Structure formats: structure tokens, C-alpha cells
Length: 300
Image (cartoon, rainbow, N blue to C red; front, side, top):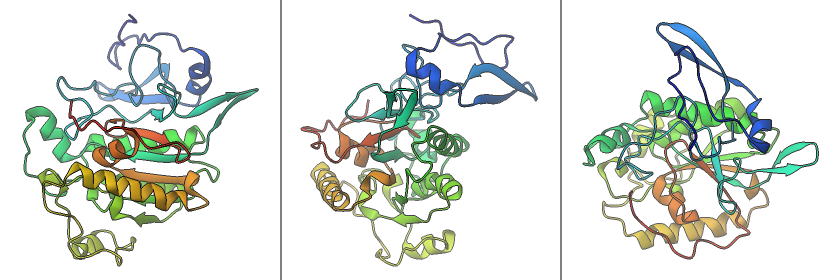
């Protein structure tokens, strides 16, 4: 069992050695952290899309808080910082990077990104009770996760150089805030797509009316949405799976579906892939592959 890293800012940081493709990708950039009031540059490269074998799962970055006990990847996941990804078909991959002679290259596939930690996630992770926050915003950690995801996806080539040509986002504020760093870096508009919204099960899944969204996000087009665009609480799981099925068909009919970033939510990504992801984590979704045979709706 590899030895856990010491807190950043201590005299020394020790991590297990990188292996194979992880070692290649880890040289992309270094993490700068602040500790004790002054800048500290650790000499261990940030994970980028690679993982330290055996130390942590996909999506966990250096300095990120560990998953909370009893938290898991459900709606209350405080979540590790989003420095990694998972290939839907490939298990524990290197953020969807495939080996080739002379280096690595990104495989073209739609990217499903879960929003960063929201105010709801923060409180739900601590209490496992619905705090009653309607359309919550991102926490400071959630903003960091969104920025880190954008930085990493661009650094690894998964979202750079035309790899992402369109950004789709749920109308919830937490998804729009997570999409913002990508739109800023890529110079792309964010297309609002209500089909990729969360399953309406908690107070956080009560959205903001279109009139409020237009005032808060004048750069986005909400004209195709009803004033109240979310359903009543208690949305059946079959409804979410039906939305995922319809979205798969819609996207598969488009020639550039492989160049799409979708900023969505735990429940919708679960319905699309059968996999549960934490805040700020992403999956590569290949629509040429069949949908999941079964979806387990369980918040760990």
C-alpha cells in the first residue's frame, strides 16, 4: 500500500512514483500551493490526467480533500478536485489518453463533466440531510474544481486545438458556473440544454426561472426554455433514463458529437454511462458503444 502524501507546505512531500503513461503526462505542469501565508512550490508534478497507481482514484488531484466518509459520489459529494477523468469503456484510464509511438494522443469522444462542489453538496456531505438550498451556487472549492478541470482538459489536449467545438450545459447555476472557465478559455458560447439537467429529487434541483437566468447570464440564450423549465420534485428514474436515451440519439445524429463538452450532473451522467462521478470529474462517452445495461441509483 503506497504511503499517503504529507500535507502541502510541510518540509517534504512524498508520493509514489509515477508509472508509464502517467509519468509522461505528469510533466505538463507543476502545482503551486499557498501555505503558512507564503507561496510554496512543491516539487511533485500535478496529476494532470494521469493517476498515481494505488494512491487515489480518477479525478483526485494533489492537495484535494479526500472523499468524505459515507459521502461517495452522490449529490452530497464534497468531492476531490477534478484533475482526472475516466474512460467510460476503459476503466481506470489516463483521462482518455491512448498510447501511441512517440507519446500520447486524445481519443475523440464526448466529454461528460459533473459540476463542481455546490453549496448543497457541501452541507449534504456533512449532514446527509437536504439543506433546502434552491439552485445553489458553487462553493470556493467548486470554482477551483471547475478551473482545474478546464486547465487539465486543455493541458492534456482533450479540450484544446479544436477537440471541443461546442459546450452544452444544464440551466442550473452550478452547471453554468462550471462551464464558464471552458467558455472563457476556448472562446466558445455555452449552449443551454435542459435535457442534461439533474434528476429533480432535492431542493437544489429546483431551478431559477428563465427571467432570473437572463438577468444573471445575459451572454447566454435561454429563449428556448419555459419560464419554469424543471419538473416537480420526485422525478422518476425512468424519466432520467429516457432523457439520456433521447440525448444519445440527438447527439449521435450530429457529425461533431465527438467534439462536445457536456456540463451536467450526477444523475444524468449516471443514466448516460452507468458510472457515478464526483464533483469536477469527467467521463469520456463514446456514443458508438451501447448504453449501460443497468443503472444503479444509489448514493454511496
